[in-house]
Image 1 (tube, one colour):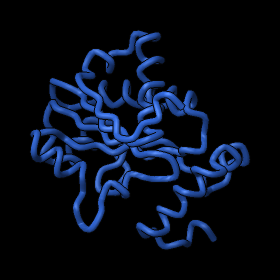
Image 2 (cartoon, rainbow, N blue to C red; image 1 turned 60 degrees about the horizontal axis):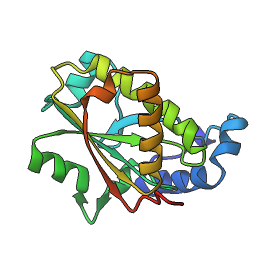
Image 3 (cartoon, one colour; image 1 turned 180 degrees about the vertical axis):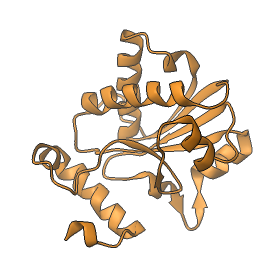
Length: 175
């Protein structure tokens, strides 16, 4: 039945909220409503290989802008009233926009570890020389980003060397 549901922005928002509230349960029970961490662009999953990256991101360059959403949200919600914040920032600063979609109901450290691994894979398959990685993180997304940086530095991951800036929007750094 779930596989037959039509994918709409509203359905995706409901699924993101559900994952934010009971995402750990959905993961534990292997429920098909669980969200698996992935990079997306214009609501479509990005397969992490050079050919797919080039075809999904036709104006790809060496400046990556990663948009990381907050709790109970998803990558689609960076758009409001037909204004996509990631696309506009990327255009203004000549960057290639990538959006993270993840289960915000999982523990921050779990998401941080997963993001660390996913970023390393993204960097290793990026089809052009990387000049910089910039992350814009909203709310819990900032905590997940900080966690990924912790694990990335601890494990001496390549992606951390490309990270130049992080913009935190409403991140509860002190709880």
